Image 1 (cartoon, rainbow, N blue to C red):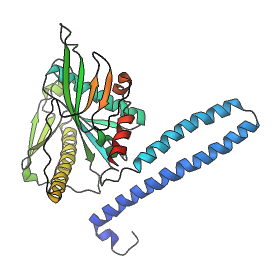
Image 2: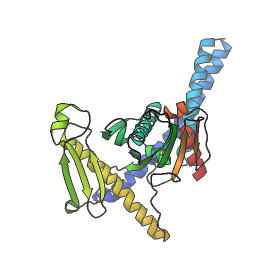
Image 3: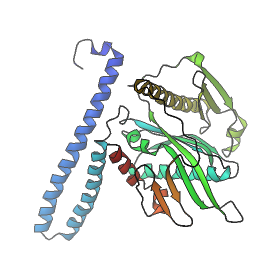
Image 4: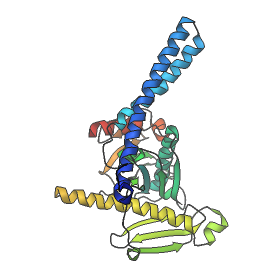
Amino acid sequence: MAENGFWDRPDDARKVIGQLKIARHVVVGFDGPAKTCTDLQELYEMARDEADAATIEAVARDLGALEARVHDFELESLLAGDNDHLGAVVTIHPGAGGTESQDWAEMLYRMYTRYCERRGWPAAVLDLQPGEEAGLKDASFEVDTEYAFGFLKAETGVHRLVRISPFDAAKRRQTSFASVHVTPLIDDTIVVDIKDDDLRIDTYRASGAGGQHVNKTESAVRITHIPTSIVAQSQAERSQHKNRESAMKMLKSRLYTHFQAIEKARQAGLTEPKKDINFGSQIRSYVLQPYTMVKDQRTSAEPSDVSRVLDGDIDLFIDAFLRHKE
């Protein structure tokens, strides 16, 4: 960075700054837990010599927290992808099945936002479209924190739910599907070239709850990238300007992932078929009836507590996915 003319090459400068940011994260991630471990060891020895039970209990709690930090750092060492250090944009779509699938999409949305809460990650809504009776027609949110994409990319795919339908008076068993798509949150080190002529921007009235202003003004925004037919939309905010910013953010993220996948396929001489949101294409099954089980089809991870999983405890799946991929 001290090289003459470094700042005269903005594209190269952005890349170097991004690499420096990752390197600093790794160094801090290693040095921080190492120092904490030394401090706790010294504190424990003092408390032991003085028979200070309260301090020993506090050290034990801090050791548990330290173990979680070391575990995360270990997993981060497996995140070597070009975009793994970035934040994430998570999009959830219900499959065929109307209210059943829309309700399942809302359950997944809650699961992921609870996961973010557990980790202390900020989750900002980009788009949230309620269903007519229950659930969600569409949901998108961003997680603007380091390595969120590296962790959450494990969740991309079709998720299957089996349960007794709460919307069926006959109480029959129902299978529902929803897709989850995770893309990297583009930062200032990545430039996505989008021509204005390639965009079609439509405004419309937001649907669902939101008050008189939301439903009676054209605050919702839909942006279509004409060459690829990729669409991003947002109606989460009262302001059309804010919704446009959110939709553009999602569009850039999806276009970046789209073109990156095309380039990888071209280099490999392969094309990857797009999965349908239906039976046989799921990455994970959640069974609530006639027994309870969650099973990941890719790694065979199978925790016993379904309620805890649906409350955001999905670390087992992410851990298994990253290690299996490695």
